[in-house]
Every structure is written in C-alpha cells, then in structure tokens.
Length: 109
View 1 (cartoon, rainbow, N blue to C red):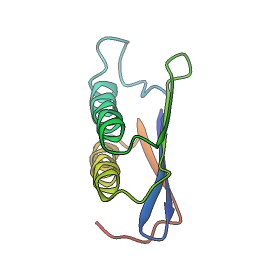
View 2: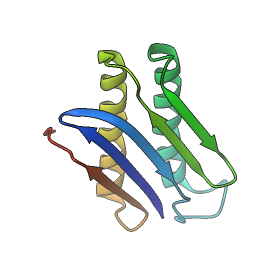
View 3: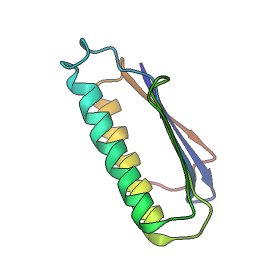
View 4: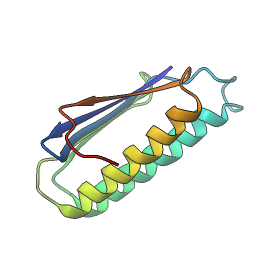
C-alpha cells in the first residue's frame, strides 16, 4: 500500500510524504503506482522550480519521496495542494491501495 502523509500548519501545507508500493499489480504493470508516481514526480519538479529552499528527499530503495517547505511561497502551496487533491482522488478510487493522512489539516476542498 502507498501511504501519503500531508503535514499542515493551519491551512498551509508544510510537507508531503509518499511512501510504499501500491501492490495493485506487478512492477511495470501497476497503473495505480504509475498514477501516484506521475502526480508525485510532477510535484517534485514544480517544487524544485518554484521553491528552491524546500527540502526534497527521494529514496528509491524505500519507495519514499518527501517534500518539506521552508518558505511561504504561494506557488509551492498551489503545487502541493494540487498534488494532494490528485492523490486524494486516486485514493478515493482505490482505497485498498492508497491511503492519505492529514496532520492538522484546516482547509477544505
């Protein structure tokens, strides 16, 4: 199962962590994993471009991507909130393979 954890400070996202394999299908055939990876990798590209002070940790061996914001960039907020919406949508359709958890969430979609 892939686990997504979003950390908040009020209505601002402070971190987004995605870890684990979905287990939907074999490697190379897992469409759920591909969807999660596409959303997450796009968020990483956006954060690198628009929030250069953010911390990004990628550990392929542990199937882990962690993004932690260190600034108040509205662009970074938009990127992570959009990624979270996409990941929540995937989880809603495949809850046995993707789980999304929120820490201190105070904004509504």
